[in-house]
Amino acid sequence: MSAYQELLRTAFSRVPEPGRYLSAATLAAYTDFERASKPDLPFRFERVRLGVAMSLLQVLADLGDHEESRQVLAVLHRALSARSTSEIDTIIQKDAKLFDKFYTNLYVNEEGEQLLHLFERTLDADTKPLMDGVIHEALGLIPELDFDHDDEDEE
Image (cartoon, rainbow, N blue to C red):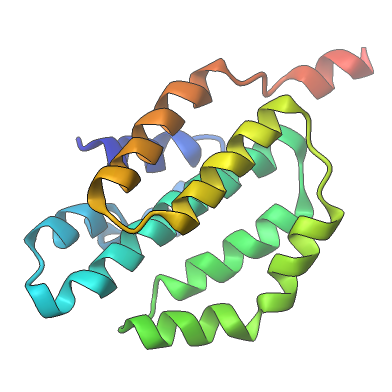
């Protein structure tokens, strides 16, 4: 299993129906990117970016039960069904207000800040090594997160 697939599976492990997000095409996005022809590289890279970004937002949503994270995650998930980079852009632009709302209404703790930083780096990454760095850093961070802190506070 690639690091990309491991990130996806780890991020969506707390979701009741992970298969909803982890389609065969989504899981194969990194392999498809590595095998892509030069003209197809930008589109294949964007699919990897969407998968990584979805993973980070899912972990953020699980960490703090952020509805805005789930809404942006849904947009990214819809964008994965696109057949071109321009179609991805159209889907994202259509719901750009959700991204604005996400950043405006989001209060996070230190762990959330780390995830947001990785999310921003995912959006900024423009090379395979930069994206690989985000994937590996996320895989190192997720096991360290305290997903039960809210339960402890309520007791």
